[in-house]
Image (cartoon, rainbow, N blue to C red; front, side, top):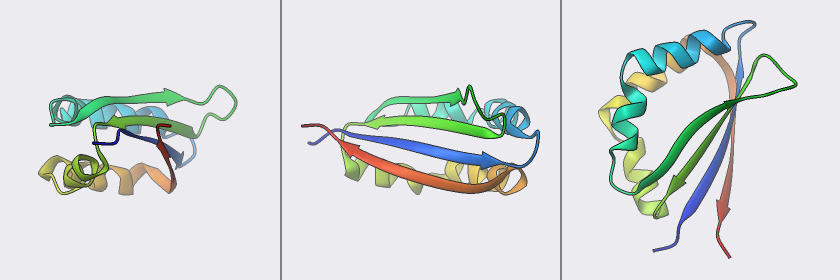
Amino acid sequence: MDEITLIVTYRCKDGKRGSFVRDVAAQGILDKILQEEGCMAYKYAMSATDEDELILIERWASEALQQAHLAREHMQQLKSIKERYVISTTVDKLKQY
């Protein structure tokens, strides 16, 4: 299996970055994701230069396991939370040499 890393950049609504992260954590979504098969890392980082930008770093054992992760019930919960706080999302996919 080929490991995959995703760098997800969320553009949050003005002043809503912290609320987004708190709501995701309060629903237990992060814990559920970290328990998924193939999840090697799933961590938020706040931009040091833009208070409305949030970075998510995901590492998965394979692209197939990452794709299966998207179909999980808690990802539907995350989508609902994201709709309240996030304006746009970009995803950069990285593979190991």
